Amino acid sequence: MMKKNKIFVACDTSNLNQIKKIIKYTRTNQLKIIPKFGLQFFYSKSGRKFLENFKSEFFLDVKLNDIPQTALSAMDSLKDLKKLRYITVHASGGLDMLKTVTKKAKKINKNIKVLGVTVLTSLNNKSLKRIGHTKSVEKLVMHQVNLLKKSGAAGCICSAKEAGIIRKKFKNFYIVTPGIRLPGDKSDDQARIMTPREAFKNKVSAIVMGRSLVKKNIKNNVKKLIDHLNQ
Ligand code: C5P
Image (cartoon, rainbow, N blue to C red; front, side):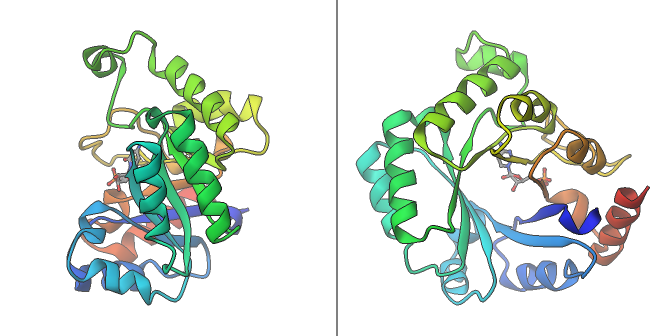
């Protein structure tokens, strides 16, 4: 059962050597671990070059959010990244933008999954209210998931707490959940967290793990994760 569990490791650093270290030490034949690169690396001098030549599939977490034409052009500018397989776009950017990006991504490569970011896992009901939303986290996530479905996007980014209700409604939706912590680990800036086991129980398609995997001894953390999933 474990090999089926897909894990994206968040390579959250602009330091190329550190990136290489994360990739090397998270390599295991017991789990499917795919690197996820975020803004800090993609914006860095060596980041984009590194990804141009990257030889295995990766996730680019750039969270596009702009008017349709700009988002479309941004997607087009990524077409030379041959191994790009997952990309994020904010659901709050609206239906037209989501449709435009999804269509463009399909044209570039049918294997690219466009994933819509719903409510960030660092937010809770109180922080949503502050932004001006009147819906609860769960209601807003579901609302945005319906919008994503309509746009043709392959899936969404949400917390594992919402995954259960989404899966109930959509059997074939690619649900990816950050905000994952091994038991006992600090939540840091995340507000809606779950353990890897709890997340997979909620039928997520894949989880994102950053600090729980890459802090201190990476190999040791991977071993802890394998043990945790085997329990
Ligand atoms: O270290 P940690 O496991 O909290 O890292 C979570 C990763 O997932 C970060 O790279 C963060 O940018 C990303 N992410 C998130 N919440 C979202 C979308 C992406 O935490 N809604």
